Image 1: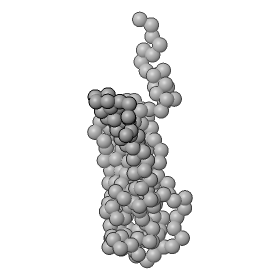
Image 2 (image 1 turned 60 degrees about the vertical axis):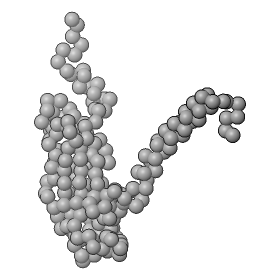
Image 3 (image 1 turned 90 degrees about the vertical axis):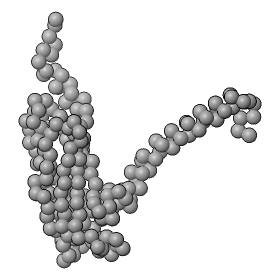
Image 4 (image 1 turned 135 degrees about the vertical axis):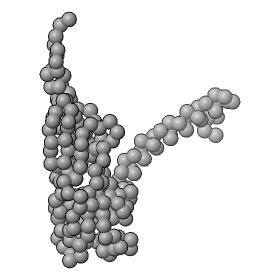
Amino acid sequence: MIFPRLQGPQRTLVQTVSLVVAMASLSFAAVPFYDWFCRVTGFGGTTSVADAGSDVILDRTIKVRFDASLEQGMPWTFKPAVPSMDIRIGETGLAFYEAHNPTDRPVAGTASFNVFPYSAGGFFTKIECFCFTEQVLQPGETVQMPVSFYVDPALVDDREGRFVNEIVLSYTFHLTPLPDEQAALTTSTAPNAGAVN
């Protein structure tokens, strides 16, 4: 018996609270475990990351399509510079996305991403990407944000991946709080900042 000295409702209460605490602990552990699992396996369209391009470039080409969307409430405009490109498997590609802040205030955002079909996720490898860091756009600012990548040649030997002829790289920008230093600067330059009533 786990709680030999407790009887009736007290024992039930302690067991219930213990179960809730254990479940909450497991839920916090699940998020980093799931993130690790997706990065290792490419599950759910999660991409790989590398420090440099591939050593092997195949003659076979693959089409990469680029998609952009915004979380509800994100005031930017956001789109790919080109809708697609054909690239040799293993070749390093460079694509750009354009973001514009039409508001009169700085706005910060972070990009989430995935790859479709999901079977290609683990083979789509990013070298550099704007999605690795938070982006802050000043009022009226427009930026070109690069992503360099390659499709791992191992794709052609994969049971499902070898049938993939087209990959869609999709980004969604989410509104995030301004970094502390930017928020402090914005507050200090706001109209009536420091005014005494």
